[in-house]
Image (cartoon, rainbow, N blue to C red; front, side, top):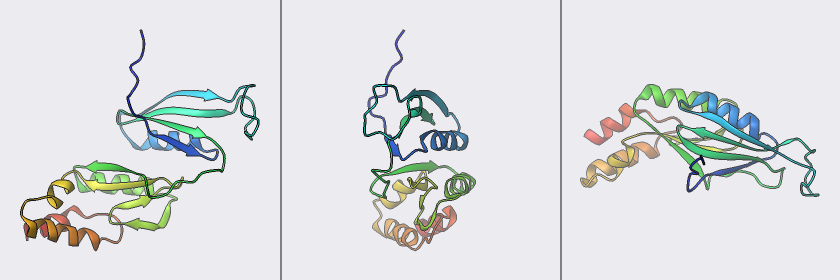
Length: 167
C-alpha cells in the first residue's frame, strides 16, 4: 500500500541543523512526528561538505502538515519573506507557542505577533479569529483592531484586540 503524498510540502533549508530543528518543532506541536530520514550517500554532490551517511533530509509533520528539513550547507538563510502562521484559540495557547518558539530566537524580530526562532525561521502566533476581525464589514471595528495590532511590540494579547474590536 502506498502512502498518500501531500500535494505541497514546505522544504526548509538548514546549514546542518535539520534534525535538531525537526526534533525541536515536533516537541512543541501536538499531533506531530518525525517520519523519515535520508542520508548522504556515496553518490552525493561533490560540492557537499557532508560526509557519506550524514543526514541529508528529515521528513516530519506538525499538526498534520508535512515538512522536509534539508541539511544543505551555509548557502541560503531564512528571512521574513516566508513565515508559518500558528492560529491559536486562547491566550494560553499564544503564550505557549510564543515561549517555545522565541527560546533562543532573535528578540529584535519580535513584533505584531511575529517572531524568529533560534534557527532563523519566522512564525506568526495569532488568534484564530484575527482575520475575521481585521476583515469585518464594519470598517471602524477592523480599523481599531488593525491599529491595536500594529501597536503590539511583541506577543499578541487577545483581550487587547477583542476590546479594540468591540470599541
